Length: 216
Image (cartoon, rainbow, N blue to C red; front, side, top):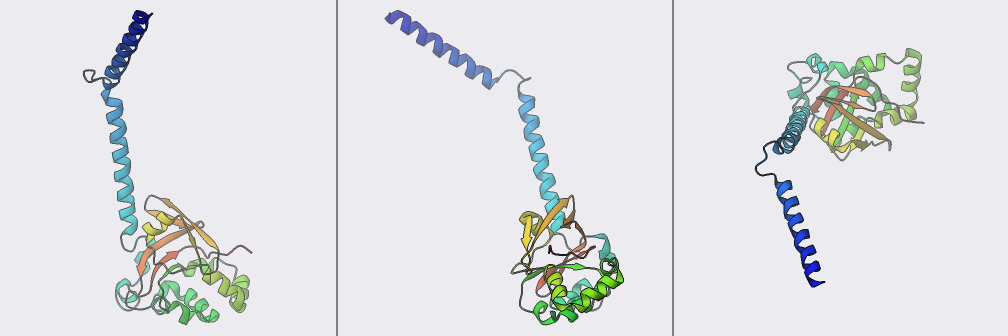
């Protein structure tokens, strides 16, 4: 009986050694490539992610950035010296937004200490709203304030990479916005960021192509 048990133990030990050696596969060149390729794929994916995040952190990303004045108070350098509402007032692509902010009495708020993350609809975004509807919104201070504060995140100044990392941000309005990324482009509740990472003295501004409307 002892001999049998000892034999069983020896067989089990030998089998274990064989499995370990087979797993190691030190002399079998054909076993190495799958693991090596997997590691290479992972490294490449990480590099792509790092590059994409670096692109999102770069200044002034997006096709509409070309419409921003090259110099003067409305340029990127000029806006960086002023708080958000003042900076926007010097930028011709944001003139309708500036009018709306004035109608809602939010100039002092947006020129406050901050920091803020602001999603700023450009003029064409407002122009896409039927004129009668836009006029009604402008005349309704409560509704206008609700819409405009839905474009502002308080307490954080997030660049595009920071937005993607957050995934969801909560606005001053109280509603949440979902951030989605595709390469070096991002969207906010479906609105495309067409010129991102615009710095002002108290905020990071992302110009978007659609006016965001909070859920009723």
